[in-house]
Length: 175
Image (cartoon, helix red, strand yellow):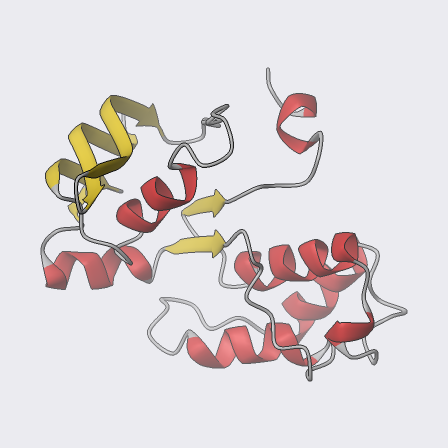
């Protein structure tokens, strides 16, 4: 069994307020983990800890077999992980064609540099091929989510975190 995520007593406090807790998780590679928690329960905080964007207050975590609390290992993990944050973090003044290109340029240390052909293929797969010259701010929220997904998938990550994914996406792919 190869694990993608393993946590033990992972917690994050903000002052005296417990924001997130992940007691013991063991998620195998190739599996989908859905966090069906209420709004404000710490899902985004947990993802930020697992991706090295936020240090936990306590606990241990391994992502893709690496200790994210060690700065060198965390850098290795960041190169192999894709993230779609809740706020999507897209540049409104870029086109759909430019967003994946910016994502590719930012991935200089990735094992395999994403190609323009891969970018075209993803935009086509997600139904955005005819809209690639529009500015991102002209897109509907659903189209922006598709674009963020294309940007996250372009470097071919080993692990993908979706914070507030597409409505119905996780339910239709459970198996």
